[in-house]
Length: 232
Image (tube, rainbow, N blue to C red; front, side, top):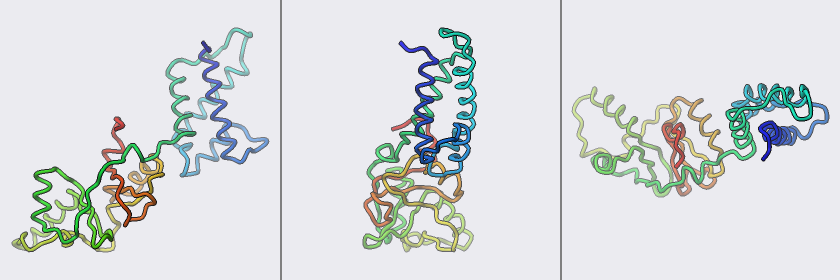
């Protein structure tokens, strides 16, 4: 069974090899400098792990360069740092895709669906997102949050006659950012995390095969889904 220091160095070397490949194999660039440069790229997770990687580099140097004897390592990694470096290696070299983790059947609705029917579906089936389509063309997304805001705003304008309203009446086009984003099935989970972090109005990310809004829905992600500690 390999020693903790040997396991640590194996994982470290794999990470270093991956970093070099991402940097097009520079001949004279150290581990820490590669981390700093690649941390600027948003299509990689290096930035999220940069601080840990820099600390890990110091531990690696202590193991390799400060060895007192052949059988004694001055800084033997503990179980926590072993699990941490292995997780970082996995995040960097095999980043998780949104599919299959968030793959599920998503129901689309006609944009002329009566509002009373939407409320009935919410009450009976507890749906919270309603992707709207007109003849197969995506028109917008109604969420419970948007529904509540719409009711609050319209209640200030007098009596509401719900029986006359349809789903399309809830779509607000005021020039502001939309509450949805489409992505392809091969999008990384960490990229979706960045979308929710950087776009305050985003309520849902919808998945189609190639990110085409008019394609078949393969899944939908809400903020609470992406930040859940459990993976379905």
